[in-house]
Length: 95
Image (cartoon, rainbow, N blue to C red; front, side, top):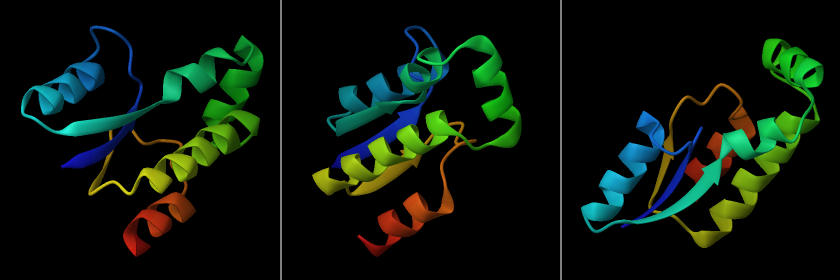
């Protein structure tokens, strides 16, 4: 099964450990790491976007999720999905 897996995928974090567990069970995972988008922002900008749940970081993250949907995953696994927009979930459901 192909799983589109998204969340804060930091080495040693529970999200990353779950993704690895799925792979050990024989599933293919396509990973979209929220942290890579957050780290690209300055601290103040990141904090504002965190509170408002909108901004360039959130748009870039959701655009990456939409691009990853092109891999035709069987499942979308959202771990700590604070910034996943309803449009991305709707696109995944339609698929």
